[in-house]
Length: 132
Image (cartoon, rainbow, N blue to C red; front, side, top):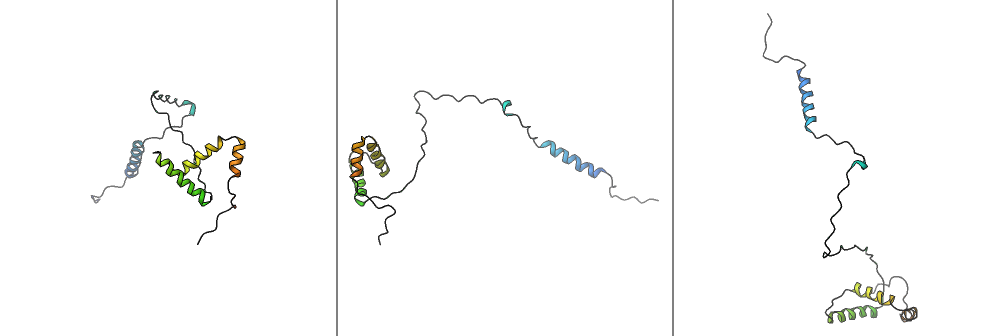
C-alpha cells in the first residue's frame, strides 16, 4: 500500500506562479512611450503678451570683474566724490563713479580727451610692491 503524506506534490505549478507574478508586475508598471518625431509634437501656444502698463523685462547684462592700480590721491578723489554725491542725497558706489567718469570721457571731443589723458600721472606697469 502506498503511503500518503501531507506534503504537497511537486508539480510544474511553481514555475507557472512565478511567471504569472512577473507578468502581473510587468503589466502594472507604466509602459514607456514610443518616441515621437519632433514634427508630430504639437506646437506650444504662444505666450500671452504683457499689458502695456507692465514694466518691461530686465535684460541681464554680463558683468566683468577686473582690478587695477591707481595713486592714493586718485583713490582719495573717489572718496571725495562719494561724499559729494551723499550730500546731494544720492549715495553712490565706487563702480558707479568710475562708470560715470567713463561716460563723461566718452562725451569729450578728441582734443579735450587727449589733454585729459596727458594730465594724468604715468604709473609703472604691474602690481605695486607690498608695503611692510
